[in-house]
Length: 175
Image (cartoon, rainbow, N blue to C red; front, side):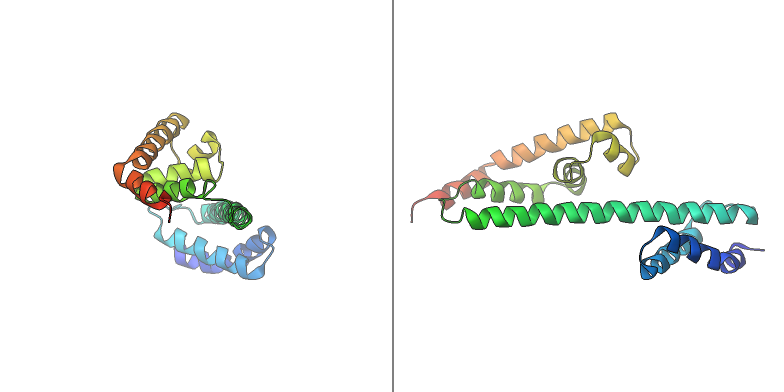
């Protein structure tokens, strides 16, 4: 039996397992679809048909964990953003109380290369610990520490950049 036949044969078991780990049947079906896609595109697959079943369960489980992490990050991000929006609304009458610095920081953050943005987002925005970030990126903790350090230095350099400083000067002039 080839992998395609095995996947088709085991599909009811995959759906049942996905429904047991997911609260929503639609999400469970998406998990199975994603798992099958990963299985079919995987470079290394089990050669033994009996090993396909636990391998697929592991893929479904990992996808469930990944989705839970994504939802947590999104929820925390939106909570943080809504908190900032509420704070900005409350302090709208205060003459630029910190908002200009926030805007400049965000502008500088956008200028970072994707790897620097990713590491700072995971550590500084979402609040993941270095070990958790190392698990997400599948690199050693020491690598995370050095990447965070370099990314923070790059962000500070961009914030201190003359273009950003000029913008700050222009924006703070009395009208």
